[in-house]
Picture (cartoon, rainbow over the protein chains, first blue to last red):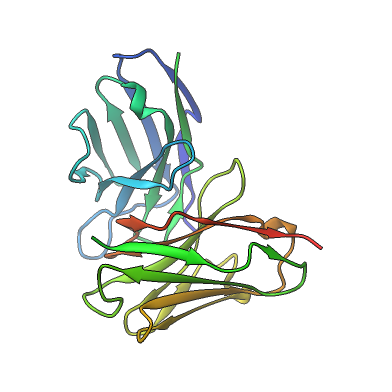
Length: 111
Length: 119
């Protein structure tokens, strides 16, 4: 099984400041077709998760461009350039290369 | 836009079988190359993928749950279903259904339904 490890698990951020979440996989996420299936989801309080980014760096429509994803192989990062109040919630990375598995989640809160 | 809605009993007794249905609207469950997944979340905890079914009916399950899970599809009703047998309190969670164009890129989610396992 592929284990996804996120850090930090808790992320207090001042409004307007940047934030960064790390996600590491126990195996390479490069699939046989050459793609890397690493997705990011946001779960706001009391809501269902919502996809933010797929295949490492592809931002979904409607997702603000302050969100960006990067990485390769086993190391990935979600960055928020300037945190806004609506960004509060839990962020999950998830790999879709070796069946599926989620990271533990990172709880972003405003300082 | 595709919408998904979970339904089923909110309370299940220990050792019994949990049964949930996800109804898909705004699109046909059998059109396109889509998977349909179940995911759960215990209170205050993270997300756990349970399993998926393809439009052809082929399935894949989380190895940790495989012996107890069955996912099926009813294309005539535009629904897919989850059965989880021999439940315990550890199976108490919010259960979500989601559409998946492949490789876990879940693009639409249901609102989730809480299932409590208790006598």
